[in-house]
Image (cartoon, rainbow, N blue to C red):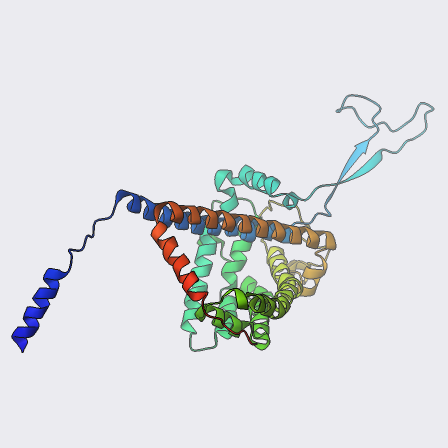
Length: 380
């Protein structure tokens, strides 16, 4: 019996055509381009998110556009160095005329903000604080991993609070002038860390709610079940209309709630945290953007018995409507940039597959055609 099995195995091996593991040059080039495109997209997405979402958005939350400049006019001479005239032709006393000039916020334009950052630190200006941010995220992941026995939202909130000192140091590095100190020498004192904990807790809770509330609504409306069904069962033209109707009926409320939570809960929390952190910037540090470090007199120095920081409610109330609209425009521009980058990535990847790996495209089309023969009822 064993000899028969051996003979059959040898016969099968002899009948099997030799496997050709060699790849054509075109296939190698195609795979290289595809993996290279994916790597470039991931890297570009990370850099865009850091420069625009982290750095520029933080500067927009802290910058105070109400700062004014006063220019005296009326010297009566074309010489800019001539003294101001204090009397007219008749010998009467004339007070100098003052004009109030409202400076345009630096963060109202991406180009102006990037130019401003490069003027401070050269080409690395837009990436200021990058090392500290990486340290913060590594510490955040490490602390959250230590609490994996807790529910993920609770573990994340605790990790954010415990690492809030690193986040405070990053904020102060981003909004201040360059310093020769290493990043670990710019860590805040334990006293400053304790001061920022309430604002960090508020942000951490709001951040988790911005995910949990839409996810819960998606489960209640049946959007989660619909997504699972579409992921496992094919659809055809007959059921396409029902699918679109179900997606609109269940997905639209989730989108509306997600946007409302992001604007009404998460945005005020992150602005409050950024401005509380900015109020804790040491007096020895110079800022790179104009803002009132007393926040309209709300920050009372510790030397005269104050807390030396702004309260959470005052931090949000001092962020005027013009600044809020400007910040929303910043996020809208960021969304447009990310959407354009994603569209470019999909188009480039599709062209590369069509040119270098058409057999993969044919296999996908064949699977879609095979699945179109069955009708999937959509019931939510």
